[in-house]
Image 1 (cartoon, helix red, strand yellow):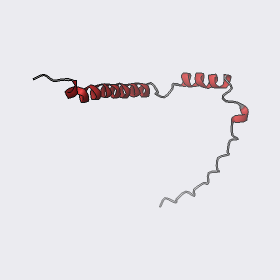
Image 2 (tube, rainbow, N blue to C red):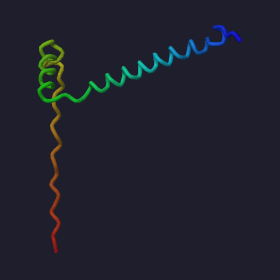
Image 3 (cartoon, rainbow, N blue to C red):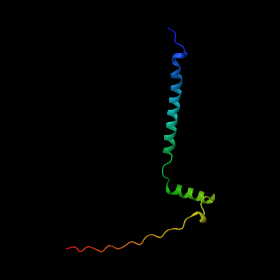
Image 4 (tube, rainbow, N blue to C red):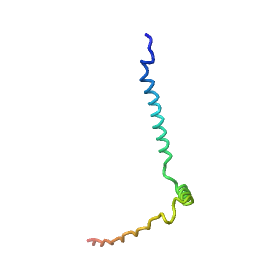
Length: 79
């Protein structure tokens, strides 16, 4: 019995789509792994680079809000 492409066309579509989906998922996992928290030295370098490019300046910062004053709790008498 001779089989033609008409019997295999679903496979010819599904296999490449599955391979593309697998590669897409693996690529996303690799990019997420590279986004680990920065070390202090790397953070300082990125901040300095952002300031030098003009992304951060004095006019763009909001004024700091003062912290609310902490109220002192009366000490309980130990009996």
